[in-house]
Length: 254
Image (cartoon, rainbow, N blue to C red; front, side, top):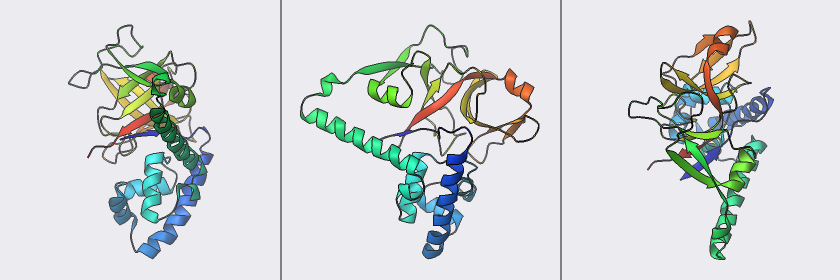
């Protein structure tokens, strides 16, 4: 089962803040009715720890579609009640699924156009076999619908490639084995978001956001057990940025 997710488009954080504010208001009412704490709700709904629930409710970690659906199901509401943006994205996925179903019924599947995106090769130790600059020799590709790719990633797909998440640092947003779609044309920190870095031979996914004071940046993993790192502007410029994650597919294992 594949879930397509994208980060909020705005760089000023307002959509994420407004969504979190609306969700928090709903949560406070519904949690009281259900008689559950943030910790209990996070466990029941499959969101994670109390800390993660708090981060989503207070806008510290932006909502994505998978998490929004879990909140909606757990609270007995609809995604549109707190995030029209993600509700629209969910409807697009539903509509796309219906179109594929209709296409298969009338024999039109053969008319679907596909585009191949290269996969960054990773060896057993988690070390990327290539330099951080996209190399010539990619050994694997993933085929995706051209219509989907152009809608979610844009029409210029030459610099895009796929990275398979190697650890749980970005859980529950991006889990081990999930497919991250990386824009390789981004070679330095360009606004808040999730970036792919190369550090000590390892490929790392981390969320980056600018701090209000001193021009510093925070490198943050979504998983609680990973510590955040504060970088000066100069240190941020020296990072080997592979690219910026524009979306991901989450593979749910059963």
